[in-house]
Length: 307
Image 1 (cartoon, helix red, strand yellow):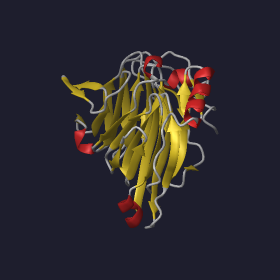
Image 2 (cartoon, one colour; image 1 turned 60 degrees about the vertical axis):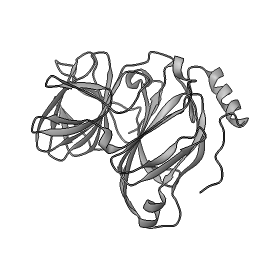
Image 3 (cartoon, helix red, strand yellow; image 1 turned 180 degrees about the horizontal axis):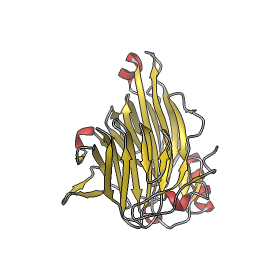
Image 4 (cartoon, one colour; image 1 turned 90 degrees about the vertical axis):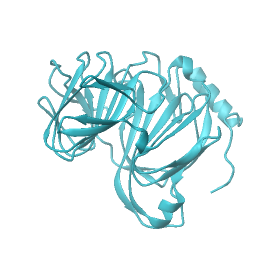
């Protein structure tokens, strides 16, 4: 089954239901460091139901042996969107032609806004390469609104301790990465700066039970089940799959088994044309052609040869 073959489920009720499930593709290498399942991409049939999100690659847990070679992805360009990398295990170092850079470790998040364009690389840290160990990451692409596609690039290296901690009764704990969430009368604000309204958080079930939380009634809401068991209404969500929830309802209700871990993505759709080509995401073909010309002319910069 491919991502374009959707698994349908029950119709919406008072809480959001599963509208369809995006199963993982066969694993493939991105560079030589990220062995990923692609769970969504900006296919014309999908863009309206996943906006403002574009693509999600999941590198499930994998053990790497010690090596002097730094695995990863070498210099490549981006324009018109943001890359968000969630480090669940392992370490990655980033550097870009706009001056952004740093290391993210287990529990950290890297939020890079490509905006008007840059080149960057993502490689295992030197320490992780030399020591080896378990590696698990998610990379998410977030679209930029038309008015911000040519904004100046920005880099946010967010450490795990910066994220507000959430508690869902005795059932689950979480951390709020981006956006605003009100639970039990208390409003929490995520650490990441965003360019359109969204809610991004991790959930972990401490025991079997129910988790409920509000979302905007106009948002697109997606759930990645990294591990464990998840039921929404009558629908079981398979591990390593992305559930796209129905629209309009402003409540999410999840049945979780203890130890389950979920990435929640909920965002207001941009309602703008999407024209994606390779590492560029713009609104028109002409803008894509311009992005390619600008990159080839060196106007997005270059990295030095430092390993």
